[in-house]
Each structure stands twice: as C-alpha cells, then as structure tokens.
Length: 216
Image (cartoon, rainbow, N blue to C red):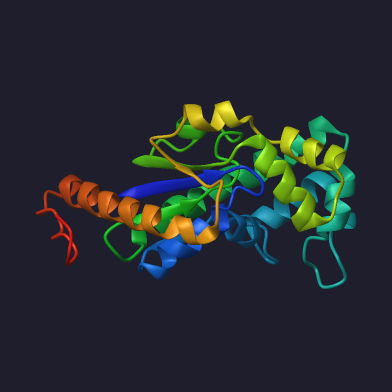
C-alpha cells in the first residue's frame, strides 16, 4: 500500500488549491468527489442499487443519476439520506483505497472533503496521515459570501452543515492554516511535501530523500 496522506478541510478553506499545489509537485491526488461520481456511473452496481432503493425516477433521460432529483428526494428526509449514503460511501472508500494502492510516486494524497463527517480514521483505517487545511470561521464566512454571492446567514448555514473546526482539528496530524494570500501556501506545501516524502521513504525502509538545493 502506498504511503497515504488524507487532505481535508471545510467549505472555502482552500483545500482545492492545496491539492493543486501538491499535484504541481508531482503527487498523485485521488479525489473523493470523482470517486462519488464513478461509483454511481451508468451501468455500475452502485447506480443499480440506488435505483432499486429509490426508483427509476432518480434517473435522467440518458440513464444517469439525476442529481437534482436525488437531492430533492433526500432533502429533509434523514432516513433517505442515510440510505443513499450507505450505498455510496462504502464504494467511495473502496475506490479511494484502490486508487491509493496503485498510485505512482513516493506517496499519494487522498482528497476527502467530508473526512471528519464520514468517520475519520475509523472509516479510513488505511490512512497514514491526515492534513487539515484550517481557516478561522470568520474568514471562511467571508470567502463563502464572496465566492457564492450569498448573505451571511446562508454562509453560516453552509458552514454549520459540516463538521466543526474543532472536529476537523481533532483528527489532524498536520494543520495548514490558510488565512492569507494564496501565494503564502506554496512554501508550506513544499515543506509538507518534503516531510511526506521522508515519512514515505522511512515507512518503505528506504533512505530519506536528499534535501533540495539550498536546504539543510
């Protein structure tokens, strides 16, 4: 199994930007959002189970899942939402684990937006390390309002729908605070990349990577 680092963070934390910076350093990123689409793609066992549970009315004309119809079906119905999650989430975890096991490179980053909400290490026991992109709630609120064009009340409800900041920090091995300019992230990501390369080499019984020019 490839040395695996989970990346997570709340809405508007900048997690996607951090994932892109790791990609720029040559690190493979397995994305839970992609996994959630793949496991219920047309013709998949996952989609067949969704249809068996909720009926063919959740399909669009092409035979794919009508996500708007599905959201409407489970909105305000906790039992239906849990049923849908019981179909999708185990398949997503398996998809991500398989992707991590076969990924190229010294280690793999697994992008899981709702890691704290989805059970953390209990649900993902194969993770070696968890990186949380952290941002103060007031900064998060401001970014959501600017990004989505919503008012403070709706921004707060979006934030409240996720795990709390403390819940995310409780599962973190590493915390990347992203309360400033995007440019400030780069040196922090580069430092984390060096750390993870070293940890991955150690876990594999290999010599630690040599420092970059000008380091150490």
